[in-house]
Amino acid sequence: MKSHYHSRVLIVTYAHWEGLSRLPALLHKAGCEISVLGVPDNFPAYSRFVEHQFISPSDVDAVVADLNVHLQNQTEKYDWIVIGDDPLLYALEKRRNEAWVKASFPTIAGAEGIDFITSKAVFIQRCKKAALSVPDFDLCSDRHELQAAGQRLGYPLVVKEAQGFAGLAVRIIEDEAALSGIHLQHQVIAQKFIQGRLASAAAIYRKGKPIAWFSYYRSRTWGDCGPSAAIEFKVFPSLEKILVQLGELSGFHGLCGVDFIEQETTGELVLLEQNFRPTLTMDLGSRVGVDFAKAIGILLRAGADSEAHPPMQNDAAKRVVPLFPQDVFRAIDAGDRRGLLKWILYPLWWREMHWKEPFIMFLNLRHIILKLRGRKKVNTRRFV
Image (cartoon, rainbow, N blue to C red; front, top):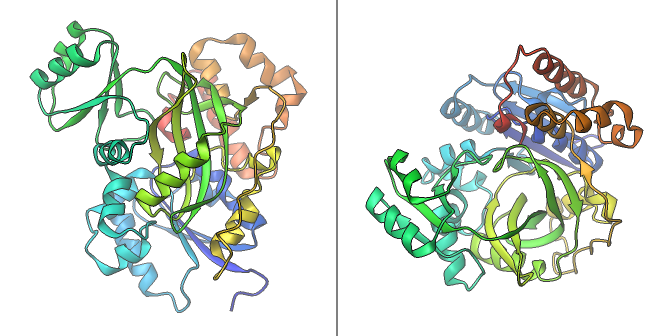
């Protein structure tokens, strides 16, 4: 029995990502009963909107095994299973031939969709074949191939692992001499560096079709390749066509993020990658007229009219929106005292703090205080 809830949703999490803590409130607004299955002390479990918690050992394969057992024990199926982080997607990919994994994976495109989601190498090759604008690239298996790529593509050179997240699998190589410290154990992507402004979009797909999205410049990031720390909303007219093509390639179903660069000289959007899981800006769309809670209702409703035109993003006032706690940690690491003081003295920024989630707020403040005291090293990958 679903009581007063419209849908049952299970969030599965392994990676201790703070950004995922925004999802329960969004799902609650959409009328969902929310359960969380994940490792101890995962961020979503601290949400006051979560009805049920199921704790797994702190091992990604154990989480996947527990998910299998948990789903078998359900008398009533979940309406949506949200795979919350990349390590879980990679662990599920290893068991891709099992029927329950096929049913849980967020794509309707079968094995081709799984490959597109879990391999950055497959992603960029298929995007290029589909005539999507991506940086010029070479696939390299040893240092000699990497040197040849550097000579062809020029420096700085972007080097990406086939799997990775939070910027940890991306390196920017400034010159050929810097290649001497790289030892390849598997194939990587050597990618041309594109001059321009970094931007992203948060999107919701229903069975391969985008039903809502909004976009923004990444005004500040926590580390060169790390998570966003502040954003500036921006409408990109050519983005819809890109999102539609990506959906056709992936068959993706759920919340995701798309990263791209607005090329400096031409203004063309050059696609970098797609993150096939909820991103930390997912709850900000309502500020520019894109209600993700309403879109989640469409995603979950059987027979919903997915052909209706998605809501259009409003042209918002051009102001930078800081993200909490990411921008606080960025300011601490960068020695940006002015930026840190703004969080204390500037009331307009206080609205960015998640007051409706007191336990998550307390947890974040605790991390900040410990870091300010020099007692805690905070890893950016926890706050994507």
